[in-house]
Length: 274
Image 1: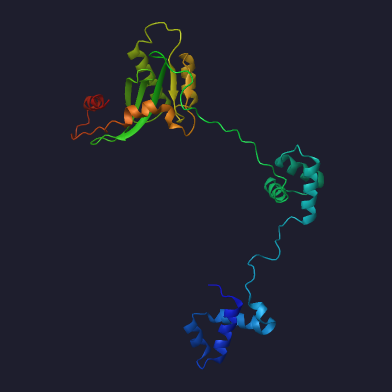
Image 2: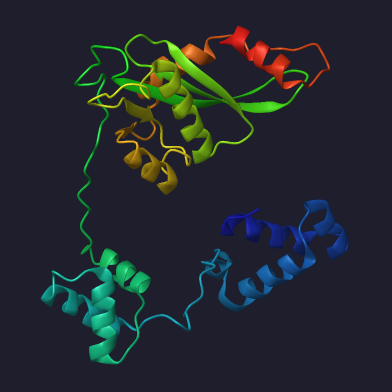
């Protein structure tokens, strides 16, 4: 607790005029003896003004950049306005033979009000697709849903949803969320929709979020080989895949009260769920 000089002086006079020993008086006042004697020495040497709390900051910093060097850096920055902070720090070190880090140069120039605010480009996601689908198999939405099947474990449900009809074409239960699981689900969708049996001019576009399995290079290479375009939603904008999310998350999670772990029982349970 910090005391103003007036209260410190009152404590000193109370201890001086007390009939009890100093230790007992300070214990009653909840003041440490070392603190009291420090106050008392300051009061005796310099009076009441010395009882004011001093700033805890050190008087000097051993590694502080001298003011002359700071002024040189500011002058150099004004002469070369096109240089970045890093380039300016390197140029000053080379020419002046005095090392100033990039962070120190930034602090010095910011204190001199020479740092301009960066130009931000705000990218806002649209409320709806500009070119909406007009027929089936123009665009497929894919997503992973992570949930627990009671009696078994946690699983990833990979789905392919037709953007136009909002029909879940295929689904695949996975233990991981990898690019291989995405390609397997797309192959199942191609087989179920018949796109792999006929020659089509334009393969369905794939719409996904920015999960690691969807931005991987393996998936991009595979889609390029299949002549399929890939569209990813804007970051932090889940509304882009609202159809896919609503199609799965609005359903009750599947539950199993049996202890069997047969794959056909699990598939039957997921078929009822979908």
